[in-house]
Length: 169
Image (cartoon, rainbow, N blue to C red; front, side):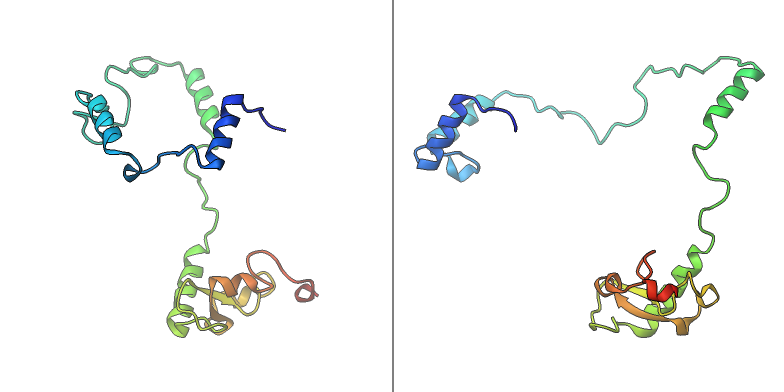
């Protein structure tokens, strides 16, 4: 059920609720004397980022990769190659039709210029009147689309991958 709080923590919470304890959050909450004390305590302190320029990335100075200068046998090269398979760039793109759908959607938005349900001008998307999964031949047909805002588009029964059972039959 959680961690038990220490007694002093409970006592401080009680005092805060009663209004006897004030927690300082902003510069305006501090008295002039407290501001002066904080200022004096920070004098001479060197900031952690003094002299640093920008964000440092990459290997540290003097770092040498474990493979540098080593001659590997053909067997070892094959093992490394097998271990790396499936990582990095894909040989076959996942969706070849992606750019055509984007162009189709832009054409629909340029044609209608507003949501056809609520009239909104923000977050416009192209919506297929006939679902792509049931009518793939009409996927890129401009007459098969209307412009909807994202909110109205999510309310449709064919948004994303969900299809109404009536549409399937």
